[in-house]
Amino acid sequence: MVSPVVVIGGGLAGAAVATRLARTGQAVTVIEREAGPHEKVCGEFLSVEGCQDLAGLGLPPEHLGAVAIDRVRVLHRRHAVEAKLPFVARGLSRAIMDEALLDMARKAGAEVLRGVRVTGLQGTRVLTSAGEYEASHVMLATGKHDLRAMPRAAPATRDGYVGFKMHWRLSPRALDALGSAIELVLFGQGYAGLQRVGTREANLCLVVRRQHFAELGGTWDALLARLMDEPGLASRLGDAQPLMARPLAIANLPYGHMHRPSGDEGAVWRLGDQAAMTASLSGDGMAVALRSATLAADLFTRGATTAQFHRLLAAQVGPQVRRAMRLQRLSEHPLALALGMQAARACPRLLTLGARATRLPAYEATKA
Ligand SMILES: Cc1cc2nc3c(=O)[nH]c(=O)nc-3n(C[C@H](O)[C@H](O)[C@H](O)COP(=O)(O)OP(=O)(O)OC[C@H]3O[C@@H](n4cnc5c(N)ncnc54)[C@H](O)[C@@H]3O)c2cc1C
Image 1: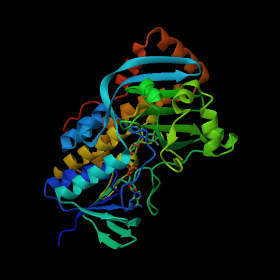
Image 2: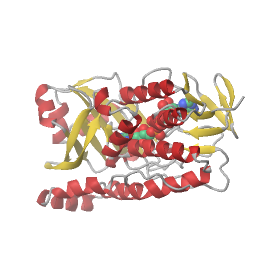
Image 3: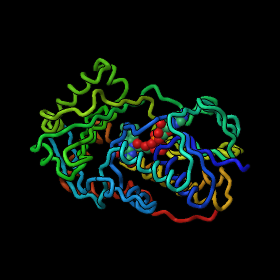
Image 4: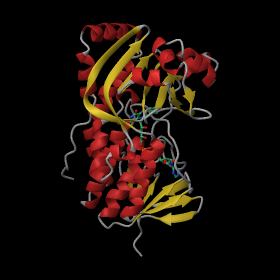
């Protein structure tokens, strides 16, 4: 019997590559540790490239209830600047999006194992909580989670970030004021993004320097109290109802990570955050994950090597990651932030240009 391609992780990258490969007739097994729909720490801003990729798979996000996001509003202390985005993005809960994609992979013919955790990888032998699987190739799509027995995707940094996500039911007044904008609140030691992800629901996702979080007392309540000092957030969340018992949190975010193949990588393809992790301020991480799946499926069916794939992926997404990281660093530098806000208030179109400059280029089927 021919061994299948085993996809480890059924998030965006994993489910998308499984769908694309299964549609070519390739035997694929997806192993996802979560047994059912689950939320993830994510701003849930699906950029235009991600929307196009999903539509190309036959899953336009608007069919899943995604709301249109076509403006950006940047807030810093008492200042606010607003501009039109140069594209229409979408806001959609990850629990809905990821589940729909995994369902699509199943319908395309992939075998999807839920509630099974991969515990190790020995060459193409995949060790799991439910036994071992022999793979012809492995697509490693575990997001920011590293597998034991595999080199870390990226070293954790001491001054790194902690990320949080919480869904809220906003009051009609706050919902109206938020409108179809993504609001970015820059508070110096991090930033928060607020946007609609449903008719009355909004997502607050933020990253904060780990050290600042510790100084605040290291609790969500203390962090939220600090955020409420920001006039923009206080006016939106002051009378909002949290829709989750506790926020989701994640630490050690390897921002700027770009996988560089070191010699022979064998048959292990790294996808999504395992391959590249862009600054979340740019709202393009999901587009990068989907792009890595498109390129991997394309090159795999044309017989390319993993080294060729990783090199081409780095060439396609590397410039976006570098630009987005530069922007994210500037947003934390007090002088750069003050000057940037001043310039944006004088010329709001700078925000539109910044949003355009941090998109991925159009996908081109590339020679392997
Ligand atoms: C704070 C923050 C905000 C962000 N905001 C945005 C945004 O607004 N817009 C945007 O486009 N991007 C955003 N991103 C980035 C985006 O969330 C990621 O880039 C994207 O989810 C990566 O997709 P993935 O498929 O690589 O990983 P994931 O979507 O994380 O999927 C990985 C899957 O692997 C499974 N898994 C992990 N380990 C195992 C194991 N051992 N065995 C089996 N299964 C396993 C997990 O359960 C998960 O389902 C943000 C990221 C952060 C941290």
